[in-house]
Image: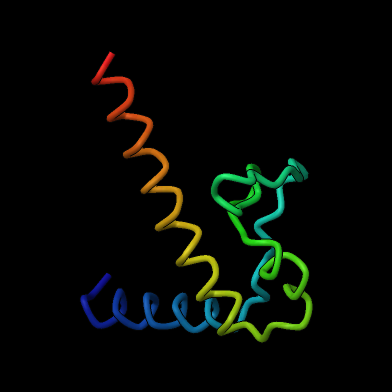
Length: 85
């Protein structure tokens, strides 16, 4: 397989990913944390949850990026708590 073939396959995969429907992050653990304002299951705000179906794919992808950041922050806080014990 040539480098050009690999690049073409990567580009096709990226295009397919951008055109694929954006899945909901809901994992059916629907419980809002009053301290953070986030769902314990999907790490979305109540507004993000309520409006998910009306968001376009770009907005949904932006929320997924925020979820990833929130998850990283949550994991870092948990690690700091463990280290301080």
